[in-house]
Length: 266
Image (cartoon, rainbow, N blue to C red):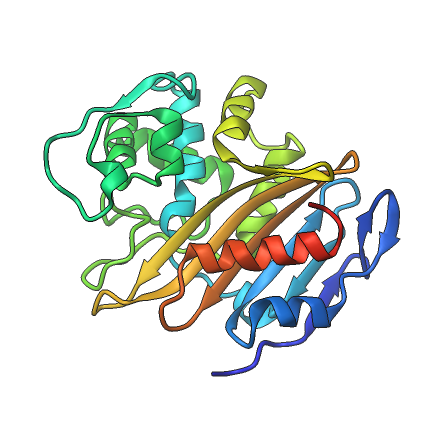
């Protein structure tokens, strides 16, 4: 397994902790990754200071997997197809799928937390290829390629090309969302915030979405965790991508949580 590239910091050499500058020690991030390949990009939403670990991987575009549900949900909210977390959203078709939580009717919030692929495929079809393409271009999402099909373009597969986006781009989009510089209404952002709420402590609140990608033989080899943390009145956007055998979004989330805990954000 290759070692991660060293820490690279742009704009400023630290993120803020409790209103004061505090470095993110490289050893802390290395320990969290446990020798696995990948990257972590953190952006201080007040100053724009960006900390990048594993810059080579941070710049490389890969499939977003289920992290695209963040934007699928926002576009659905903006187009009026969905409106609130507790609304009936997914009517199970009776087909048994390997994830038990997908085999029942779900509200929007339940479907988001279960990362229910068929539910969000149905939402994408309702949005339509034309509106989806327009929104993808408007927010400048990755390489903007949805040619694989409106209900599959974010899902890795050996026989089609997905839309591609880098961790740096994912973090930048989340930064723009948190700071209100993307064309989404405050009402849509509020619903998404509810959907993405992952953990609350006395020190802060974590908002995020995992994503997992498999290789041609069905083995998980890619994990994402994208979101932001609010702590001490400040917000930090992040994107974490990790690669390796049997790696999933749960591993990426664990890396982020470990780092945030050690830095006192959670």
